[in-house]
Length: 114
Length: 114
Picture 1 (cartoon, chains in turn cyan, orange):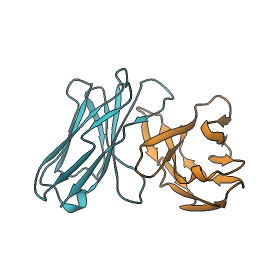
Picture 2 (picture 1 turned 60 degrees about the vertical axis):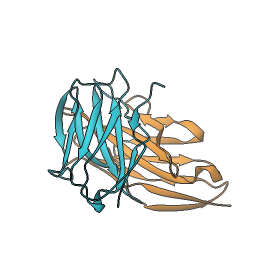
Picture 3 (picture 1 turned 120 degrees about the vertical axis):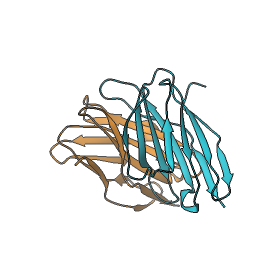
Picture 4 (picture 1 turned 120 degrees about the horizontal axis):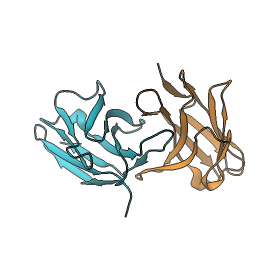
């Protein structure tokens, strides 16, 4: 499968615990995006990488959130001290460089904080 | 500021009748524009994309969209709705200028009545 892969698909955690999600983009894509989608809402932009550089972070990305893309390939999104409000679907997408391109999305990681 | 606006949060049509989902964008540049569909509990799937070639773009499942620069619009249409079209539809723009950021509209939920 050469699409965008996200792991795990589902995560249930207790409030206050830390969680980490992984995204493996399409191999030749140098741009990687994280989004959060809550029930009944559209995806909201969280952060964007070009290669290993994190070029933009949304105000939604509080200090408890951190994202990395250490070698410009896979990326991780960590949430520390999870809160119930963090329950959402976390989507990863990737696209190739240059001009007009499309973003390919993974199926997401659904986080439930209990 | 660059933005994407989907004018209708819900659209309801009868099976066999035309579908129109509206999308407008705001940008100093002409963006790349996309329509994605999201069926319940499934990932985002690309329907079609506009990348400054033909202004009328044909996508999968009989959908098409027309880019109108004068109106800054990219409305999605289909001549005849099927029950399987019931889903949420997102208009998405990739804005250039330094780097390319993917921005979602708020989504339109399409209901198809038998």
